Structures are given as structure tokens and as C-alpha cells.
Length: 95
Image (tube, rainbow, N blue to C red; front, side, top):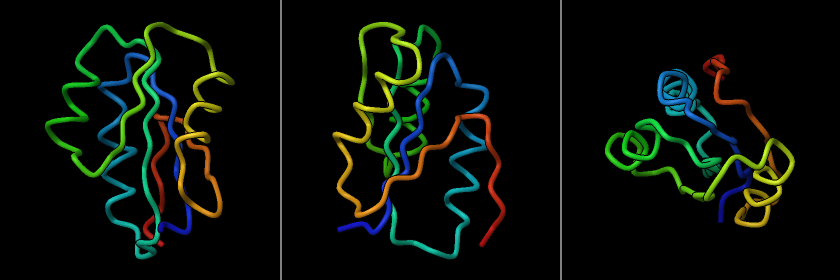
């Protein structure tokens, strides 16, 4: 069981996700899972996630529900003791 569930809402963020997810891969703390809740993207976001980030759990939604609804779907899907909410345009420090 992961200690932390990282929930990332996404809408057409194919160009942003690599920066965010690549910096998550470099973290020294490894006790986390990553859940991307896709808000009905119409670009290559889902393909990118499936092809390049197989460790990421995807919660696909059929359309854009804004922020709160997808975040809550991600929290429902989480298995960690704690939840960390991240935007898809964040770059994390390696610690």
C-alpha cells in the first residue's frame, strides 16, 4: 500500500504532463502512487500516459467537469494514507 496518493487532474495537458510526471519519477521518497484524472482530453494525453507512464493509474472522465469533481474521483480511487493534489503544470524538486 502506498503511503501517499498523488492525484493530478488533467485537461488537454499532453504538453505539461511530462514535466510533472518526470519529476515525480526522480523523487527520493518512493512510497507513493500517481493517479491522473483525465477531464475528457481531446489531445494525446491518454496515449502519452499509457505509452510513456505505465506506472500511472488513469481515471478517465467523459468530459470536462472542472476541478473539484475530478479531484474527488481521484481521491476515491486512491489507496494511500495521505493524498497530495498536484496541478499538471508543476515541476517538483528532487527530494
